[in-house]
Image (cartoon, rainbow, N blue to C red; front, side, top):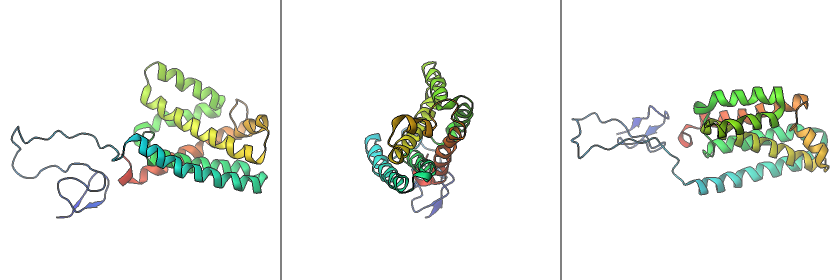
Length: 203
């Protein structure tokens, strides 16, 4: 009998567990005997991390290559192409659950954006690296991965239009005092957050 899953909102043809997100449905019959009880565990992505990384790289490299071609063709739009590529890369990062979802790390990501604007992404990276060492592991790892993916993408795309490392680093907005470029991390967070609406593949 079809059942609407309260977790992901999809209609499942199976009534014991959601065929989309794997969440086990509560039983409506008589209580289980102790030997029949099944411990419910949080839903995990169906594929192992190595496979998910392969999927991520396959899609992300295509996005970056397309952005590099656009930046090389229109150098004046390299910053915009880099930010769009970053949005796509971070979307795929979250989609394949390489990082935690926005539901789990909304506050830490918002703090990361504020630190980027005030102190540059290098300052934000130092803060979250110290927080990771101090024990704030999950939140710090998520923001650090997003920072690394975003600014690596921006540097590669901008470098394809301006093949001078110093200028490309400055335009990518890595250092303190690069002004509006520091706001570009918002593009990465937007992509990361948008993936949360793809419920069947997300947590």
